[in-house]
Image (cartoon, rainbow, N blue to C red; front, side, top):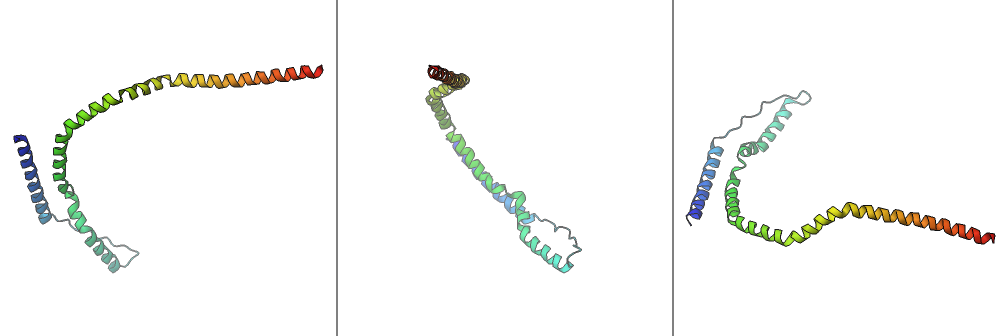
Length: 150
């Protein structure tokens, strides 16, 4: 029970620290404006207007992007706790699955072992049928010719 209580306290502390870091970063972080470059083909007034609009659109993203992982820290703690809880069940299920599926895996291993022989004998059978049919056809032609002569 003490381990669970300690884990919950760590999770709570992690959430508090995450919120404090996010507030601190939002309060002090400032991205300087990009240096303005003049485009020769366009008028300077039009170019500056576009850059201002682009700056207004991208400024929140530039503030938040370095700290985008922070909201996921509590989720990581929760998944870690879930992993620690579910790990024994996963091990038991893997063992049961291994025991249940061993006949299928054995059959698959034997089939993989016998596959080259299966292909060899299949091709040999087809070649034998083709050669035998050819010789039978030749024999029938000879027999038909011998009957025709009289």
